[in-house]
Image 1 (tube, rainbow, N blue to C red):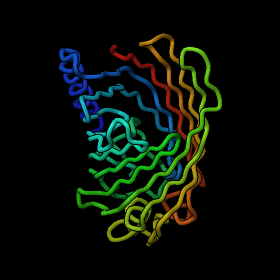
Image 2 (cartoon, rainbow, N blue to C red):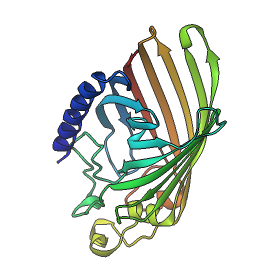
Image 3 (cartoon, rainbow, N blue to C red):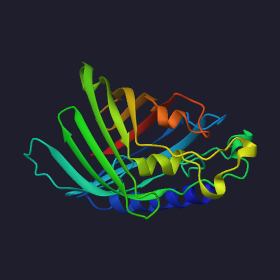
Length: 259
């Protein structure tokens, strides 16, 4: 299933890339990269994923890695705050479609465990200078949950040719419905013989620390590297499915901007 998802995604991106390049009114950035990230699940190996990287803009419409399924810019060019709204796909479940590894946890707690599904979300984004806010709400009738991300990234260094080093942090809030959807144990998933006792998670507030390097080689080619660490709320740590107090992520992308 996971291989089929990525195959279809890559095919669509390649077709879209060729279509976009044929139309000079589109702004296009494409490339590829690697992400390695930890997950909160008990005895889960580090996940690795290779990703095609495509972002495209046409007027107020935006789509790609940075923008989700699609986004529409609501704010005008001279507005002090940038506003956009659109649709995205969210999957932070145990057997996530974004986990490229076929190997999952070997811990007995996941014996017979039925992982929840990913979700289509409506998303609203706002940005003012270095401060960003994103709110996403499930619209696919799975968790009916909400997630809000507030972050601040400050440029500590700005050099020649647009080289930047940024550092900052943020707060991530998960509503009770979404937190329980991911980390709760109920119904057929209750199996005390494997240590999977009934558990109801509450709303969670996680704290994040992030750093990012942007290194342009020239006007078209650039490298972007980002590392982050997220401290998990106690209600997540208390789940029988979780054995970590925090998770980390590293991403590196090489991109080409069509001028």
